[in-house]
Amino acid sequence: MDKKGAKGYWISTATVTNPNLFSQYVEKVRPWLKEFGGEVFAKDTEPQGKERTEGANLAVICEFPSMQAAVDAYESDYYQEISKIRKAATENATFTIMEGLDEMAKLKRAMGL
Image 1 (cartoon, rainbow, N blue to C red):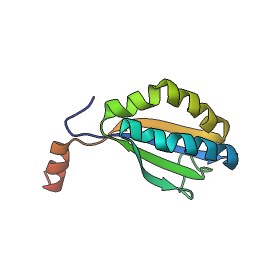
Image 2: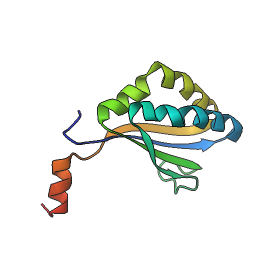
Image 3: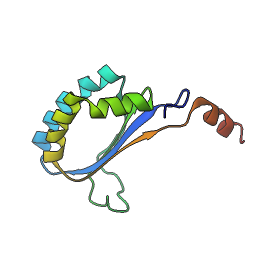
Image 4: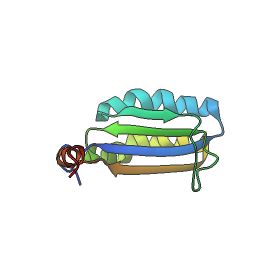
C-alpha cells in the first residue's frame, strides 16, 4: 500500500432515493473531505450503470493524496457516523477504495513501456 506518488480513491455508485436526506450528507462530507486532503474528482448524476449498477443515478470519485489517507478518511469515526446518512438516503450503493498508479508507472505508460 502507498506506492510512491500514488493517490487513493473512493469510487461510489448509488441510487439516491431521498434527495433531501442525501443533500444533508453532502453538506457534511464536502468540507470534511479537505481535512484528509480529499476532493471530489468526478461526479455524474446520469452514469451508465453496468453489472449491478444499472439503476444508479449517482457516481462519484473522490481523490486523496494517498491510499492511506483514503482508508483513514473512510475509517474515521466522523465519516462512519455521517455515512449512515448516505446509506439511509440511497439504495444499491457500491463503495470501493483503490490505489492509483504510482509516478513511475505513469511515466512508463506515457513512454509506451
